[in-house]
Length: 126
Ligand SMILES: [Mg+2]
Image (cartoon, rainbow, N blue to C red; front, side, top):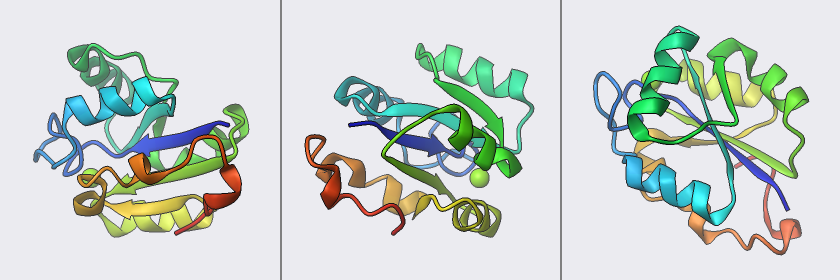
């Protein structure tokens, strides 16, 4: 069972500019539970990597937002989700058949509701 979570940064992660409601601890916990984690943001990839360094976490991917499809091709998983605070996040998710959470929804850690042993329960889009 593999589920990929793609985090926008600005307005979504607490280390974003502006800060969002998804804390580093939430991202760490998602990693610990076994999700494939990474970022898709309009920030340069080098800046994204620095933010992951600052979180002391190793992402499976960092990507430009318009390349969510490439993330999907390069990271086989049973389900894919992106979260962000802008319409461009929503559109990128829909265009690539990712489930989507707005940043304020993501701050509730909806992924913790998933049964990691039963992917039949997990919608590919929300
Ligand atoms: Mg954003």
